[in-house]
Amino acid sequence: MLEILILAIVQGISEFIPVSSSSHLIITSEYLNFKRSNLALDVSLHIGSFFAVIFYFRFEILKFLDNKILFLKILVSSIPVMIAGFLLVKFDIVNQLRNLKVIGWTTLFFGIILYFSDRFETSKNLRKNLSYKSAMIIGFFQVLSLIPGVSRSGITISSARLLKFNRVDSAKISFLLSIPTLAIVSIYGLREIFLSENPEFSFTNFIAIIFSFIFSYLTIKYLLLFLKKFSLNIFVVYRIILGLIILLISYL
Image (cartoon, rainbow, N blue to C red; front, side, top):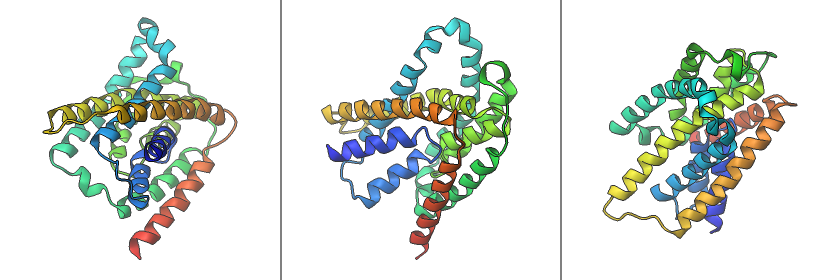
């Protein structure tokens, strides 16, 4: 149960802050030698995050008719990462990227990108300024998040900031973009589980969903409050330090 709790905390927090959930799950499972790490658990953690972002934006979703253009833009901007993700899985490229050297370099490099994207105060907001063009540009940047260490939230927030969206709305765009992405990951993962020779989805997985939901929701809520007052520098410093540590370990 302790392993489930730790992985749920890692997933819930790192999915929505700009530090890369995939790399943190890989590093945590490897260095703590977790035995429970498997497809069913990974899917459960992502389902928890998916439910959390749906619950946080429940009022916008319930008012779908008022927000249908916004959600259409979000859906359209998610197409590039869905196509790229399908190709990576089909040609089994994903596993080739899951190594410490890749994670170290991407953590460091995209941390620097995050720093430069956050240098200037900007005024664009989600409601008035998210055009189809802006959504597609952010969507194409999101494709890079398929590489462990890049961070889906990190690259989408960075690209939104480069397009001159304010910090809070950049994070909101990132959260909304996570809805179709997490949905596809969850659906694909469930499909793989139930098509396997020994389908496994137990009470432990439901516990993982609940824990992941709680920590994901709290992260979304408090990150938005944090960004109203502070810059992204704390995440930049964290990424640079973590990236250097990973590279030092992987090259020694």
